[in-house]
Picture (tube, rainbow, N blue to C red):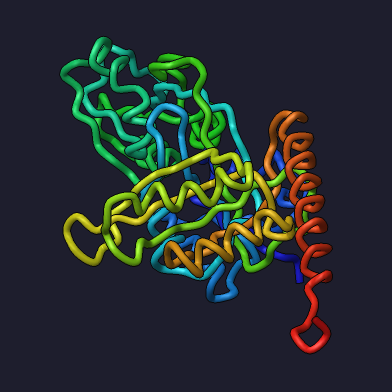
Length: 312
């Protein structure tokens, strides 16, 4: 039976577009689902081997539903990340003019990414949130109501027979969305990897976050993300999402996580996985790892020279 990969659907979303950039995933059975949570549940139940969901956008920031679901509602792990350049378009049924548009549908993130453009070009149009850009296009295509448009990729507009009324309407030209592939495995290290964790403070005290961060600084582990989110336990109680360079198989990373869990915080591991990036990251990690091994060998040599009391 062909493996199945779930994604935030329906067909025509940016998630599907990102999925199709990966030959191994594109060769699987594609399984569109209505929400991020539905994708996660499908993998948990075994209805899909993997699931692809958005986690971050360069304009709007974190997709909080994805972060919260990974932190609080599942034990699935991140196995890969995919960065997709995003170009947003205003789409409508053939014959619709820009001046006709009174309602704009899309996922909340693209609506936020086009906030300035909408305010300038369609100041009186109402915005309606949908589960995905493709669902918005699907609703516009099926609607008999005049003046309804959607924001989404040209890919999705074509699938639903819509025309592009305006191209590249995002407020910032360098627009990218990061997607993560979730499953149950930890991929082997590539030498250019990222680890994601959540830290829950054992107690709220002055310097507790600094103590957590010092564990990374002491080992030259470069943080690529630090974000606080409510723990859902009580008002003012926050946890910290941390991404940093390295893989759980690396000695430095393993040592850091051991110390964090033993001394500083409750730690939830979200995954170690390959990322795209620059070559000097790998070189920096290799140099730090070699320095750690040299120091470790020095300490072990000293410990081997300890003389038992009976032999003194």
